[in-house]
Amino acid sequence: MSTVTRRLSALLVSCLALSAAGCDSGKGSPAESKGPSSSPTSSPSSSPAPDPKPTGLGTVHQDRADSKTLDRTEGPITVKAGERFSIALRQNISARADWSLAKPRPSAAVLRKVGESSYQTAREKELVGGGHTKYFTFEALKAGDTRIVFANSFGTDKSAGGYSPDLPRTITYQVTVR
Image 1 (cartoon, helix red, strand yellow):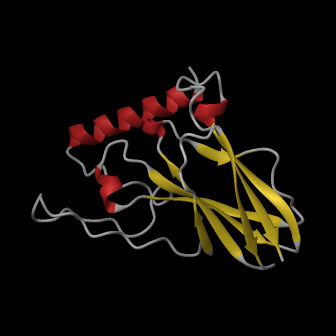
Image 2 (cartoon, rainbow, N blue to C red):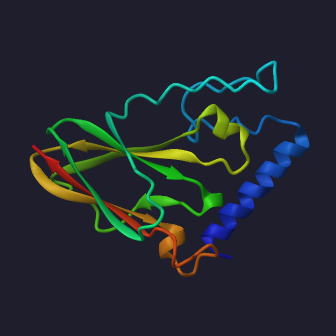
């Protein structure tokens, strides 16, 4: 069984278990969601208040989510040495988008990866398979040029159950540190 199939199976089993238990499926672990969890509103027709954006990410560069280009290059992102920045990618296993940092890695002399975090809005928490935004955070170390490559495991792994030649495969960000 492929990694992707196991992930999807685990997600489905979790959702079914939460539904059967009558639990609020919008409450994830702290690592999976940032910001306060929303409580149900008194009126089912009213929309929940938006969650505040996560903090500590530095300047956030939101991906334009072009699903028609298989391999694309974005940027340049220009930052000063010592600055922190994040690249935000939409992630949704049910929509076959599963992004991770790929090789070649950014130059360790120019950038340092600080971490990854995920964030769901209140509405996304209510939806089964609603997706989230994944933030990849970096710190600029010293002047230079490098690139950050992200790969979609569905678009690049032919052994994955969701592989399709039409899915986006890679996004490369050109980064200049001044």
